[in-house]
Amino acid sequence: MLLLILVFLTSFVVVLYATPALIKVAILKRLIDSPSEERKIHKRSVPTIGGIIIYAGTLFSFSLWYNIDNLVYSDAIFQSVKEFQLIVACSLILFFVGVKDDIIGTAPVKKLFAHIVVALILVLMGNLRITGLHGIFGVNEIPYWGSVFLSIFTYVVVVNAFNLIDGVDGLAAGIGFLASCVFGIWFIFANYYPYAALSFALAGALGGFLIFNFSPAKIFMGDSGSLIIGMFISVIAFKLIEFPVQDLSGIFVFCNKPVITISALSYPLLDTLRVFIIRAIKGQSPFAADRNHIHHMLLDCGYTHSRTVIIIYIFTLLNVSITFLSVYFYMATISLFTTVLCSLIFLFIVLRIRKTKKRKKLNHV
Image (cartoon, rainbow, N blue to C red; front, side, top):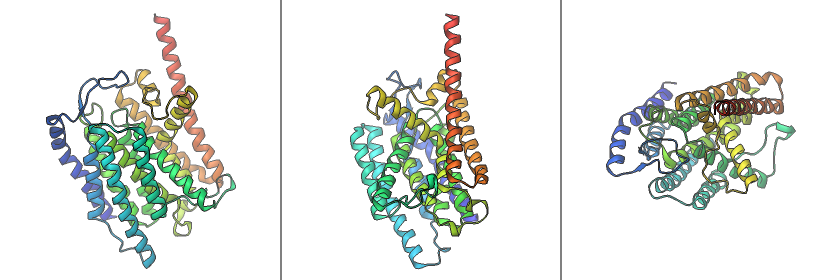
């Protein structure tokens, strides 16, 4: 536990003390995002390369305190070291793709190609994949080819989900922080140090970054940040889902691992699914930028950036809490339906509030 506290504090302190210098460099070199498009909601130019320090803080802390002393078997040690190598290699690919996009822009097709390459490396070389649904809809194991396809698809969705929700100050960083903490706590009780360390290294970096990214933001994470967060979260989620049940104890034995993961990522998954469906119906590219996200609707309801992200934080924590309580149903499918229902209720409330606000505005005209 002491080592995990050191992991968190190391990445937190690195980001906390290095970010002001990065902001100065970004302003001097004009690496900023100007409010030149109608969809952009900030009113001033803001540095947009915060992902550099998130990545640096996370990787430095994780590498510094990487520890396999509690792994007994040689196969487990070999697999852990191999996964560490692939995580570093894949994160470097996405980091440079993100930095390029932040500075000069990158075509969506090229970014999608990079996602698929990274996913193939993680799934085929690292064997980091989802092998089954763990009882959801009565399905446990799935064929190898189905496992590969599902894992690649899930990875691409999660990475793009974090990219898409990075539209309000403190939202992507905050959701990443909460998800990392949930996953980290889970791995503590699973007594699996390497991924608990990665979770808390990311959480510490995002906690330090939130001090500068919370409204009013002094720096944005950019694609270099959202892509890295999405990749780390995906890898941690895959490992959590596939963690052996026999190595767990207490309430965690009865918790459905895919449902826990979905609940921790409920907002980015809900928002991404909704936006992609709407764009598909309209015949638009799923990667086209717009102001049709749930966080934009909350802003249109009159909520500030701070209140908007706090509402979404509370929704995420409630969804995770309800998921843990749903273990008493003893059925994975019912747990999933509970999580989905909670998400749909949240969406319905937001839509209802926006509709009421619009009606009041029309009545005042």
